Length: 196
Image (cartoon, rainbow, N blue to C red; front, side):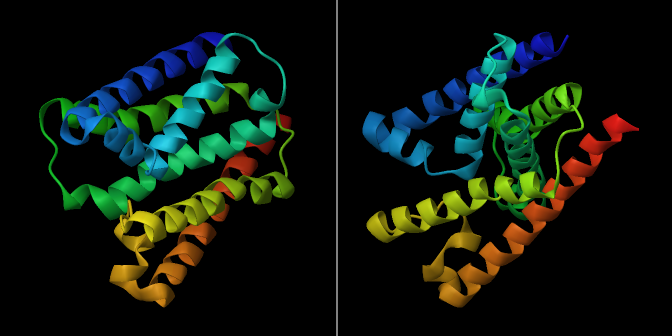
């Protein structure tokens, strides 16, 4: 059953990622579209989730399908959905296929992968795993700031030190990191309920 849920998540994930890339390339060319595509936390997290879901669907055992990695990706993709609807959704009004991709990346995939994670949870997670999951958003922040320093483009206004100043950008990172950790602790608590 878990493999079937993971397969649905993987297929839907790869489809929506390909759709979003297909929509970006005509606007920016192949190189520019790909460079912009991999600049978003949303896209990178959806790619990682699709990879993990694919590994789960084919029954691959190992680090990629470990409880710790599944936790990091579940929290990451849930965070994508929450942060989008709280901070970003009101800033634009997508239409047509862009809307389809937008819903897939920010709503459908978070729901699908959290359901996949929930079905596969085993009660083995602890606070250290929640702390380990922080490597994903912190790593992205470092990457996003380095990219922005090179080409002047920042995927998200709250990570833009040009608009916010460094104190504002660092405060955003601290606040988002704290929220991510609290969400990870919630997922750990849900995982531990397996033991009850």
